[in-house]
Length: 122
Picture 1 (cartoon, rainbow, N blue to C red):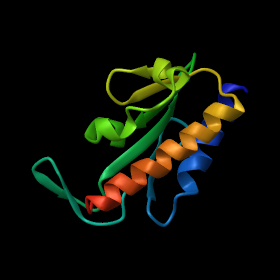
Picture 2: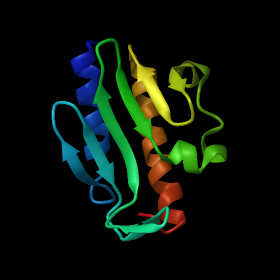
Picture 3: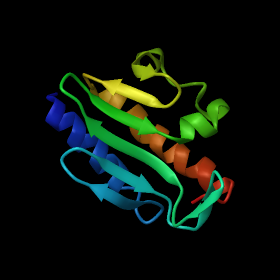
Picture 4: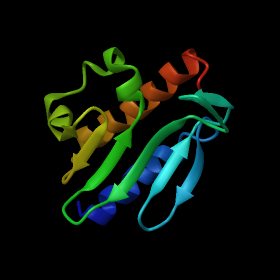
């Protein structure tokens, strides 16, 4: 897969989760989705809690995935191949995707929605 195809897959994966998520940024440099209900983010109230971003870089596509930061235990079973792409606490650096990883990323996004919904965050 090319980086452009990876970027499009990640965007489509997040878009497919509407109406639980809403698009707040959609440009060449950033695609961002948030929840759809008012929530507290730190000390301020926001229209929707930050969920994820897709950001293209020259050598990879970055998936910033907030649920893995806020609900670490829910994602302890991600595969070694996907965990290898995780840099820091919530940023995946994706250079290649095969069908298995695509399925796993979709399941990870769906699990993120479930844990956020369970906590009343989206």
